Image 1: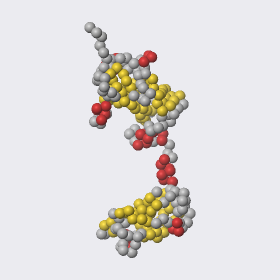
Image 2: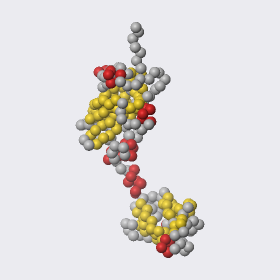
Image 3: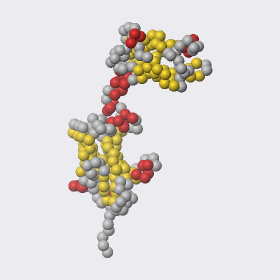
Image 4: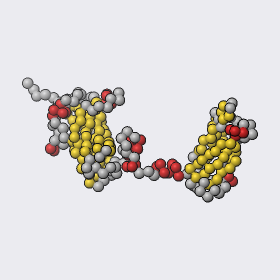
Length: 249
């Protein structure tokens, strides 16, 4: 990894310098690590860089602290620059438990949804999670919408309440977020398997804007769980609401 170093004085960013390490120490033991200090290279525009490899000297320790000497052409007040390097910082970020960072709308919440859960579904939802329903149809009993999440590792959902939300894709793309349809979603958890069921009435589906064949995936859906004061989006997909063919006169 590269450690950036910016050098400037009263005249602005300084280029064409040959900065060196005045000192470099292991923070924990105070051992001098300057003998293995890497070369400092110019990047441009006053920026320079030094390459460190975690596990390889001098970064074969957790933390380093040092001073860079920008060179004799820099005024004394700006000539020396303190530098801190931490080997485990990146590892600590990536080793964090994802389920501990699930605040709605946060990067942690989004990361929780990447590759962590596999989804299987039953009629009227396809194996890829896309949904196809008919405006004016009932979805209950044997036709109830069912989504199964496997390898789930988020919040304990045993007491969670759920909502199923549908929003027209065109409105979604304009950043309008109020759902066109919202219905209760039942959530059952068995270890790492979560089963979600959604019951819709003919009145609910009939109120949706249907599309003729050829205009697929005109809606986006999400299932959102509430666990105490926490909110977690469990799954998301595209939905097509088809137009029914009426009876012949």
